[in-house]
Amino acid sequence: MPDLQEDLQALADRRAAESAGDFDSVLTTAKTRKRRRTAGLTVIGAAAVVGAVAIVPTLRPASNTPVADSPVPTNAVVPPSVESVPSAPAIQKAGPLGLKSVTALTKAAGGQFVASFPDKQVRAVTFSLSSASKPEVALYTLVAKVPGDATTPYAIRMTGEMGMSIPSYQGAGPYTLAMPKGLPSGSYRVCTLSGSLLCGLVTVN
Image (cartoon, rainbow, N blue to C red; front, top):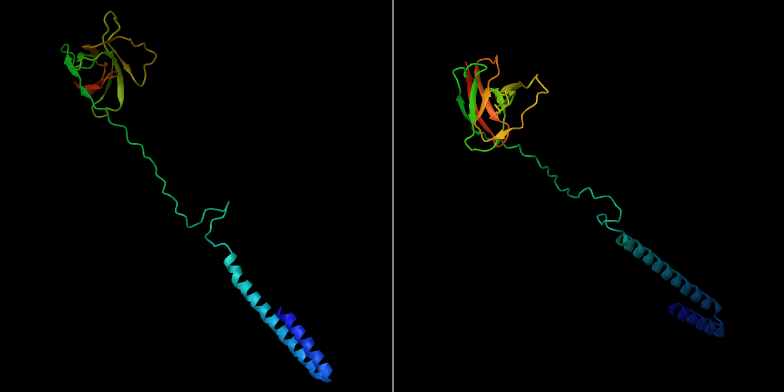
């Protein structure tokens, strides 16, 4: 609208000047108005460019704004990994095993002795024999006397004799056991192999 008003005003001035005979004055006035209008448009265009430049940064996404399918930010806190350490198995406690010699030969290698169970539990006729200094290493399996079985009692060496049948007899004791022949002198640990663990010491001279 301002441009139209200026054009109309310039036309009116030119008509008035023509009627007055001052054409040069009309032409000068029209050029002056045109320069003003061009300068105004230039200023408006420059202001529009500056405004656009000022607006553009505000339209950019923030650097820390999450974007779909983008990798995890490097400053993200990673939760600590927790490892469960299995606890060591509980050491099995041994109750007392009642041991008693049968004859004067009991203390010598090859002698016999009687094992009884204070808790009166029913157990198999098998026992383990190990050195008192290394109770975790079994040296022999002792098979107790079974009623009606003339081959019992006997000892099975853990490092050699294999394929021997073991009676499936069970009872609450007492059981008669035999020490292995040729066993070196020393203290030995005898333990049950079934039921709750019971152990006792036997000395061989």
